[in-house]
Image (cartoon, rainbow, N blue to C red):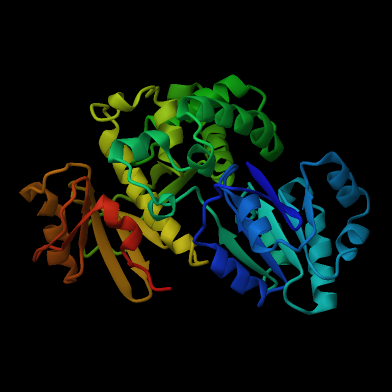
Length: 397
């Protein structure tokens, strides 16, 4: 059922998003606020429900786009009391006018933007709007936002896109269409990729490397493309919020470190689909189960930071002899190591790398997040069930 409220169409089963309060607060402080994130992460619903009285313009609507492109100054100047511009990356010429008009009005609460491309990666845009814009990121649902009991395998298989939960869509129907739409629409807008079938093969090869240290040369060879093209395509996937690269932590504690990034996806449902996991029962025995669990945990912790309107400072640590910490979070002066284990039973192997890292770093705080249900506090660190992720306050607001 759909209810009309003010100028917004709100579904009866709309899910409450943690970013809403921060977004409303930023709108009172900055002339421009932007919500960036992947397609279908809920940006439109969030902005229209948070600001129900603002006029709404979608740049995927041909009439809205033509107005914005043909007369951008008149388009922006017509609504002095604020407006929402959805999928703003489709009208990039607006950004220079946004700068001028926001400066002339010199007041907060002028424009709310959304974008499915990461304009943070566009140096020209980020420089022109510096100091005028508050940038936020809305990823798919967090475990806390789902607000229902799911098994770990269900969470991995289904992923976290809101429509899967609000509209009860089968993941096997959702993800092939999602990936096809992304490749056919967004990829061509970011860069004119001629061979889309080869690009889809590239995405699948990336899925097979989830959680691994990224060897771009090997990835390019397996796909039959050059290293230059592979790097370009990785950038496209990053700009479209499909993948992210976790960088190695810079502190070496007198050890030689691996200096290459690790590859992750913003949603495990996409990875599971790309890996050909076509049934929930296949998740447990799949070779990538551990990597998928690790990906899910890192993303959920990342969502906590984004939902505070902040940017995460997340890394991993690995030395040349194989000692590794799955996630290092920097928060001010704090450095928090987190080991991630998909196993459901706590065992001594969980503590090996944490104890090693604590010994050479001389730091005491540490967490182990695992696939079971218990919570324990040991000398090695705080052992926490994955189900408690949404209640773990690792980063200060």
